Image 1 (cartoon, chains in turn cyan, yellow):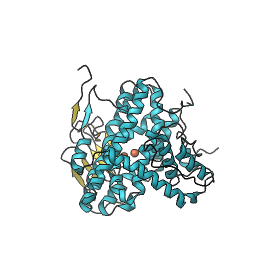
Image 2: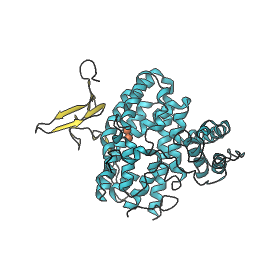
Image 3: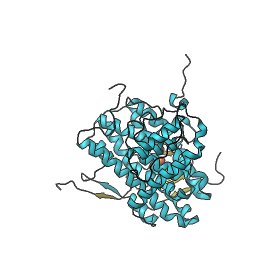
Image 4: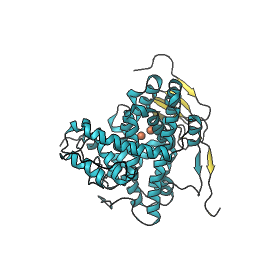
Length: 342
Length: 69
Ligand SMILES: [Fe+2]
Ligand SMILES: [Fe+2]
């Protein structure tokens, strides 16, 4: 057999199976994607961050990414599904607007993100995994994160044509690095897949959708929501900025946690790369994206702040779910993980 | 494609120097560190644990004590 240098993840194009519904909304979407008629559903009465609504939204959005096995790719533009998606988005967005305090001082928001809380009193998932988390908890964390990282940078790529001039060029500079700067073997999504494999997890796209709760889906749905709506491009940039500005120190903590747990080099590499990459991305996002965007479109300041705060809000909800479950000695997933080599 | 004109280096007020394009940095002991990024952040505050590459260690830190502190 001739050796191929190309990792199998890069050749992986298979679409995932449709997930199991978690209520009437996700049931309606999944049944419609299986070929049935789209049932009328009560969207207004649904829990905005609940499993059912978030899974329904996730399914609607995935049609714009990898799609689902056996589902015609043209369903992406099915007007009935798009109409339902819009109703779901309205409920989700209204809840976020109500739960997140408005603001328009982007520099103050950025300064706050650049202060690093340290010491024994800091409660956070990366702090826990650095100090005392178990390998099983690390695997759970990676399974949660896989919903985003196996398509890392894709939701923010929707924002590129919605920006202009220097802000667009700045965003592309960061995105280019996320996609490996022209070297597929350095794509961050691939580094994540290699970490999953080394931890005994599946690197198949969407493999853990069934496992993750609404809190996890909501974080990624916010990215898709803001990316797919031109009217929310400021929020998309805000969400991206939040990640890039806070990731470097958190990645360092995860590297330390993984070393403590004796993880192998392919596992450590993903977060190790992000310590350095996001120290640069922070600078490019602030100087090359946020500054020119706000100079060109100062009226977007409130949306940028909304994107930052909404993603922080959803990140804290997910963090609380993880730490709360782990405090009680429970799994943070909806079902236990099968591990390849325990 | 090389960028026309001289290499651009941005000296930031709080942290690293930002250098456009791939760079090779030589340390006083002769060690060479290569970075292929479109932009490289070179540590200027000397606090980086990955010196000469910035790791955001220049950030202001606020200490939060534990419940019994
Ligand atoms: Fe990345
Ligand atoms: Fe990044």
